[in-house]
Image: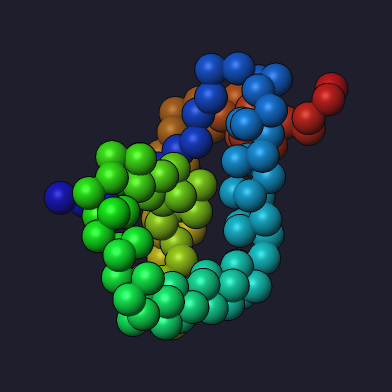
Length: 121
């Protein structure tokens, strides 16, 4: 199965939740090194907490949670699955994959115009 880069699409351009998720997505893409460092620190903290009795109980609850599975889908979509828990890649290959995929779009200019449309225009 080919590696596909998720695309964040919302039904409403004026949706407040969509604005927050887009802002997170832009921050990750604009500052990949900082985003990677933050993600790696959160993973390390989570593993440390997971080693405690309370953390183990939370891990069991979350593993059985449909909500957690859905939250993971949202996270992977917003982050373009580009963050690695070990922080090995400065510029994740997913970005390069997305550029190559976008370059194959027949109507590239309208796609890019919509993608980079300035909010509030």
